[in-house]
Length: 288
Image (tube, rainbow, N blue to C red; front, top):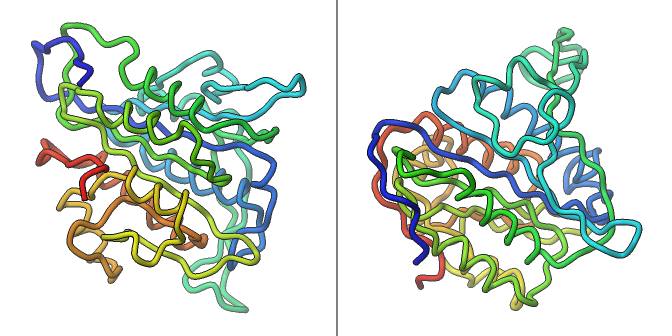
């Protein structure tokens, strides 16, 4: 396993990397919704980032991968405005540096006709820009670099880094080895957790949420995705069960053919993770 430098400090937070497939296929409307997959990811992710600004000792990176107009690949962090050029941004710095702030209308209470509406400010840090398709291996290779970038002998994390990968075009070539290299990293907080989000489209089949096996997944890349996803730590399982989500033994951090509601629930786990103290050691995917 790749080893980060030993640490001389304790009690710090960790890192979260959001890795986004920004291929043109994300223009498709999300299952059960009226917005595109890209818009749905953007709204849910920006909403989560606005919630994380109150969490101390956490660094966040938003990275994407897409094809460019020259037939090459565009892989890198997607911060803009004051944060342009940054890789990781502390949650403390997020509040002062949104790319823009929009006024959005939100219904109070249940989303039913006649419900009272209010205008709220909605900060935006990530705006999707879609491009051609490239092999996800390039995105995962960059993600692996991000997880360990800038670490020193004084680096200390109280929990393992978390990678949340949004995938759309599932291609098996070279991806398994790339994900395994991320999972094989060793950090001061333990091996990384890697979760996968796949959104359903207009013709999506049955959603598969937090599976314990690949029994209900199509063969090929979807089943591979299961093997590349980390087993959920007990405290995240408890959080999901608290929302009445059916989660079995050895459930993995993966949702497939997911809806908007499924996406929001998955991202809520990131906030639970961020607020968690020293964790029990997670088990990476590839076991079982």
